[in-house]
Image (cartoon, rainbow, N blue to C red; front, side, top):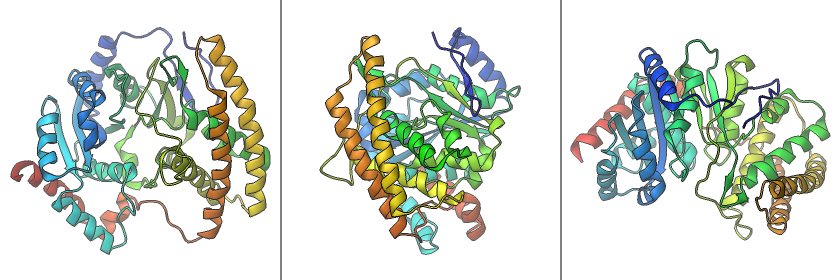
Length: 405
């Protein structure tokens, strides 16, 4: 049974009495008559060979309130794109596939590169950004939701609960973040959120004192959740990073653009599991090591825009404070796990904290040494201003791929 605690900074919508899915979906069908819902699925081609995505599509087939599904397909050849079209054809909803590696979308990307407006590196952020552009070009959405394609515990109730708060016309919310416990196979998961983000936010607050932005982030039960929904009106002005800082970057844009009364988080599942990343101690460009650097940089960049001044000494202090705070949290998580019949490996958790502590300093050094870095992808308002025809060309390119390949 969930609690009913409210933290005061972000409205939390719990799962207390479990409204039947049929009732919630019935209401969503009524709401969606006036607020059409689009779902974005950023996917690697390799995910089409896994059971998780196949199950997700089976579940989505029953989500009849969804008006449009946009699939961003990365790392696919022409033959694989054709396979993907057949693979996703089981969806009864209108759906489109952005073949990001195809010649038509590459030509659009080259146009943006020449204008200095394209995403600088491949990855989920780039994929999501183009899908957002296509959603705007399609002009058939009032609400856009996003979730990953590697969720092994997926049910369509997750999606219904995610979009309900921003679709219900009686609610004031324009942005909704999903949350859930990261528990699977008798283990407590969610290492980056538990062992990096939570202690880092607490440490920044200890070093700098009260900061409204940090208090806002602390209000989210699971800030790194990849599941969120928002009103389409937010999309043109949203600037997101192209690296692993995507989730923190989105929350930062929500903080910048919306009143806190328009933001909520919702309990979407009792259990959640997906493909796990390696810690990657030996290669800082991969896995959780890369993720920890990108997330730390995203936090530091945002705080700097709010007037926080960083120095080498500051980052050393944050690192020392973080390390002690994280070790204390390891003890709390371990005891919580034991009392619930779960397991944590304290040696591996301390190894992760040691790596994250070093990467906080690395992220700080990168931040200080690259003052001219512009890590965000330009928002679509800027792109449309620079090239008013680009969204039309994007829409036509996706249609041409669908009919001519």
